[in-house]
Image (cartoon, rainbow, N blue to C red):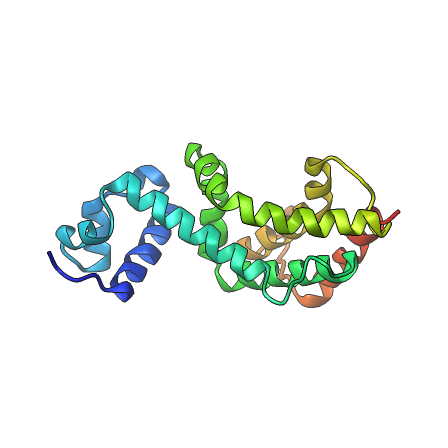
Length: 196
């Protein structure tokens, strides 16, 4: 058996993400991936058992990378406004720097695999977010809400702005570019909506 090369695995991972974003899950096959990555199909099986294992590992990798980026410089004991601002900036930077990953994450989230993938990373992520939210509620910096409503108000506006940015157009097909000023303006409104 040949030795594993982490750079080769990373190349295969990125190429798989690119193919899935472009052609959907059904557009990915080991043969097509091998051709696109300029490797033999046998090389892929050094890193992945089969197509399902490849998609699962690629999805977990992408989610882990996003979560790691989200928590850079973040402490769950931060004030609500500072903590949410740090998360917004981290999430925005990650998604703008990695537009394929952002689109791939949306595809995973809305696929049957999404439940399994997010369950694997959910425990640590949830513990950190729970500490952040409960601390903010105790300090009376955050309105107590069901999680779904909190997430919809706290993060959906950012994700929609990133989507407009990645599409290059906003409402009525007008050109749109997300920058820090627009992000901060939106964030202020979100914090105002979530503050008692």
